[in-house]
Length: 378
Image (tube, rainbow, N blue to C red; front, side, top):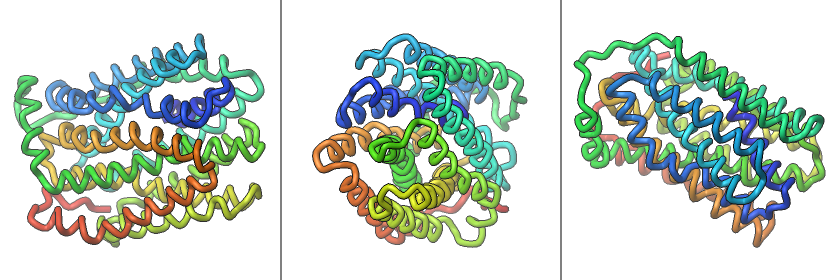
C-alpha cells in the first residue's frame, strides 16, 4: 500500500510534468485497470484453488515491472504499458488480500478487513508523502526507483505468510471458476458490485481531479503529497473502529451516510478556493469517507458468499471496481478538459449524491431474499 500511495501521486504528476493534457491523463490513469478487469476472476480462481500467496507473488512481481518502465521511459504508450502492469498488480492484490483477510476469522471479518484497510491506509500515507518529497527534491527517476525497491520488499514479505486451511480438497481450475454463473445471478453480488463501483469511483476521483487541481493551484509535489497524506489520517482511524461502526449502523445506513457526505465534500472543494487549511480539512473528510468505503464493499461481498467461494466472490465484485477504474478516469478526464476542474467537482458531487439516494432503494431490494452466511462482529 506504500507503493499504491506513491503511484497515486506519481502517475498524474509525472504525466503532467511530461506535458500531457487532462484528457490524455484520463486515458493513462484508466489504462491501469483494463487488463486488471479480466484478471479478477482468474486471480479469484487461483486463490480458491492454490491459496492467496501465489497471487500475491504475481502481484508484487508485476508491480516491479511496471515501476521499472516508468523509471526508464516517458512516452505516452510507455506510460500506458507501465500502468497496465501496475493495474495487473493492483487487481490481483485486492482479490488475494481481501480473500485472505476475510478467511482468517469469518466471524470477525468486518473487524479484520477494517484493520487491514487501516494499516494499508497508513502505508498510503507514507507513500504519498515520500513520493512527493522525493520527486520534487531528487527527481522522478529516484521516486520510481523507490517503488521498485518496495515492490521487491513486498515480494519477499508475502512469501512468509502462513497458509490458511480450507474445508474442501484442492479443486481443479474449472471447478474453481464454476461459481461465476451463480454469482452473476445473485442479486446480493450485484449489490456488492454496485458498492464496489462507488468505492472505486471515490478513489479514482482523487487521482484524476484532486491531484491536478492541487497542482493547478500552484502547489508543488511535496505539498500535494502532504495534503493527500493528511487526507489518509482519517482512513487509518476509521479502519481501526470499522467493525464496531458497521455493527451499530448496518451496511445500508452506513453506505447512505458516507455517500451523502462524500458528495457534499466534492461540492465544497471548489468553494474552498486556494486556502490550504480549508483544502486540507476537506482532504481529511474525503480520506475518512473513502476509508469507510474501502473495507465496506468486500464486507458486503463476504457477507453474502460462502467461505469456500470467498476468493471468487470478491474477484467477481472486483470486476465492478475495475470497471470504474477504467471508465471514471476517461470520462472525468474529458469532462475536466472541457469544463474545467472546478466544474468537474460539481459533477462528482452530484454523482455521489445520486449513489446515496439509490442506496436505500437498491440495498433492501437486492439483499432481502438472501440470508447472510455469517454476521460480522466487532
